[in-house]
Amino acid sequence: MDKLRKRRLTWYGHVNEMEDSRLPKKALYTYKEGKKGRGRPRKKWIDNIKEDFKERQLTIVEGGKLTFDKKAWKCFLTVTTRGGKMAELVTRWAGTLTTRVQSPWSP
Image (tube, rainbow, N blue to C red; front, top):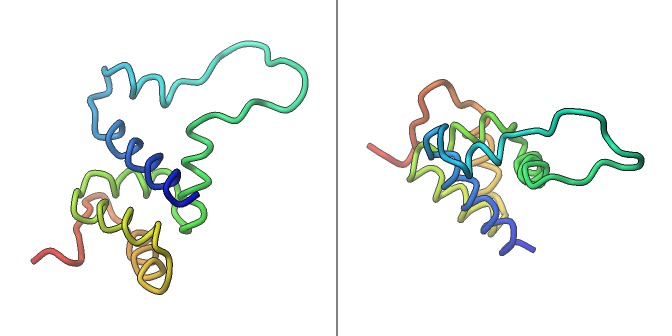
């Protein structure tokens, strides 16, 4: 399961860095308008991403900001899939993001 989560988050980071006019990014953030069918709504791909971030106490906005810092994002992906105390530290650090993301490991 961790392998799936890492692949999903890696692809999300790749798409999130694309220009807004690119088709994959439009498809990721587009919602269908109109009347919904009966029953439980189908689970969307972005809902899985939100759940992955929620497990690490991040919102989709904080996770999106994290994708723009390559070093921090790569560290987050590595640590998230391995778990443990380091994952908690990275999650706590990522939760305090401001408008500009800086890696705590860069000079």
